[in-house]
Amino acid sequence: MSEQKIVECVPNFSEGRNIRVIEQIADVIKSVDGVELKDIDPGAATNRTVITFIGNPDGVVEAAFQAIKKAAELIDMRKHHGAHPRMGATDVCPFVPVTGVTMDDCIELAKKLGERVGEELNIPVYLYEYAATSPERRNLAYVRRGEYEGLQEKLADPNMKPDFGPAKFDDSVAKTGATAIGAREFLIAYNIDLNTTEKNYATDIAFELREKGRSARR
Image (cartoon, rainbow, N blue to C red; front, side):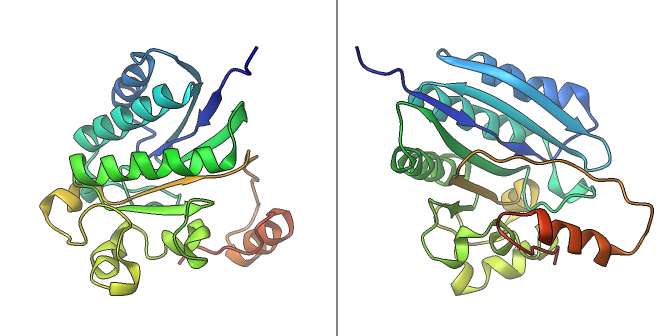
């Protein structure tokens, strides 16, 4: 008997305060056959929501596409403010192998989704982590450097041309921003409250804890 194929997807959306918007994004994920919504984690201070769902590869890709489409419809990045680095309505969308699939499978899923998002939704897409098309782009901080506010300049740089979608900052892209889509291992993330306004303390702690090493907001 063949092993069931299960993929996890953990998209991060640039909305953590408007519950109705978050619910509408979650609803399109739940509407896809073969997909199970596991968690919704909104943050008011970051103005960001992390949604986790699992399912068969085709179902997960379809749910991710529908969620990105809904986020592009409901979120206007020109009005977004939050404490977390971000560059788009759907900021990141990673695929994680769970059972019966390999990292190579997830790389192909990332490319499949990225191409569709770029072509059908007119959103610039950068592939990152294991799906990256260059060593530098494996690092999410590098891909997201400049954040949304620096996106127009980034798209004008030939070295930062998106892997899929437009390389032009038009009205559509101004609204949606760009999206990073990738394949990675499981990730553990948590917050630490510090009784200081000195950012260097937080940076030093992050450097010690991160598997990937130092990554400062730019």
